Length: 389
Image (tube, rainbow, N blue to C red; front, side, top):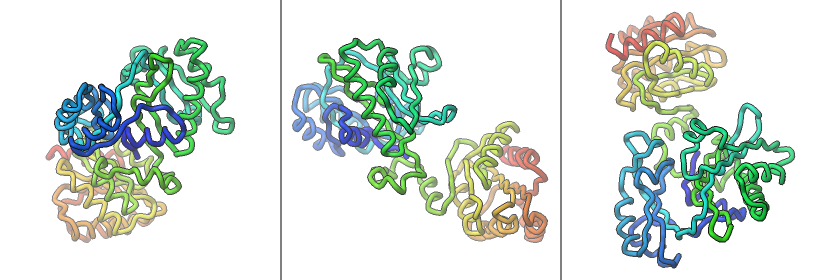
């Protein structure tokens, strides 16, 4: 789950992570009022969407008068903001963050994420603030400084010193930076975050560090104990079908292909998607119906997959262990009664009660259900069906 920049900064402030002052606004009038309350002569109008690259897309603008604040807020609110992270369809801007101007002397990058290789959180810093960290990693990996932090000991001063030395900070600024980085680590750990990104982290003319931007993502599996974070969830920023799937215990992620996938188990689902790609197709989704799938959840899975108009065929790949294959077969038949399934459905069922499942499907006499013998055969038939063969 992700939150907006202004929400991340609210969390930062509670941990004394310095940020510029700002107010959220939903209308141009509210934007002007926010600028007046902040005072000063320079403000930044920032689109609030769950995506990076807002500045390059025209979603971050500098205003030097309240009339300019109104004009820019009117332009940004309601726009379909397209960035490298939104895809060509973009995202609708429904709110803007009005922030006071800052005296920027130097820009840095500072972030935290979980490193699965070391099985520890890592903090990363770079002198290339304001740039996409992916580009820096590709073009100048030596400019990214990383420290792994053992959760048993937590963030220590030596972690901060290694980052500060790597950034080339003068001696008199190192303790200030360490204090900033230590507070950021506590934000990360206390909220079960998966990622924090401050890009840019700025140093002001008087030597202070400020989080000029803030991006945070969280572990969905920990939201049950993060009520404050859960309240910040903006459903309008999420894919409606993914929200609906979650209500039924289905793990669904929409993709941009044309072969719908229904699989049990995340590992098998990934393998299925890889095999579809290998056979020359593109998966339209990731869908894990889980180990306790029944006729209702399978039927709901079909309904959700078919809401994507790009889907030209569906590949059902189930290994019957906890969930019996005959249950899945009945779910497929139930789905054809509840939802108009007018695309080819390729079915590969193996494991517990696979023979009984095959009999159920064969006796149903549904012409667009095609049997597959194994994973490769099923993926091949699904890709061919999606292409109209």
